[in-house]
Length: 279
Image (cartoon, rainbow, N blue to C red; front, side, top):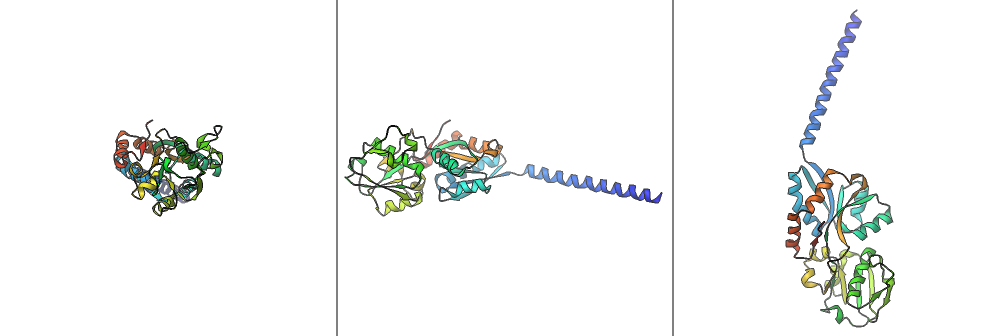
């Protein structure tokens, strides 16, 4: 009889302890729910990180604590996203994103387009593309996704012609079919170095992405001798892993980035050098 009582007592003790344990877990879960959810986004410094800093207080009011990881190249942010080190990134335009997904078999999706940064032609030697002499040297980044942008600007200026059977988004310098001024193209440079090459007057024309230009106090509107047209398909996007496409934090991030308040901030902050996308 004593053995049975001891067994009952032990079982009751286990049940009580179990109930206490469940209560603690519930309290912890409730605490986590009450706290802000953390969302880590990778971005290049300008304008992406600055735009994210602007929307951070709005997201905080929605219960989302935004953590911004900054990068100064175009490769690491996608690797970090793939490895799970960040929840999203905001630094790249659509053609570059698509090329990286295909090349690296990334399981990413485009969560939404936010803005366009017009690619600009800069020169210490000339004030207009029409002034370029025969044999002028054109410097561009090694990013294949930007080559069609360079070709589009030069073709619009009447300096070259690209094979009509090739979509400009996919065009390479090998697709030039007319080059009457015998322009010389060098395109092995890291995009972040192009502002330095411009400052050192290393070529007749240097094509620089607006984010790197403004980061070095260059004004695309005032300093560039030619800018990409506003009809550019190169919108900068928020990229996420496919599994997180419906994550409420991501959905809210894109919503806030596309808000009228954020769009006004972009226009005022960069005076047209960065143009918000309306969708």
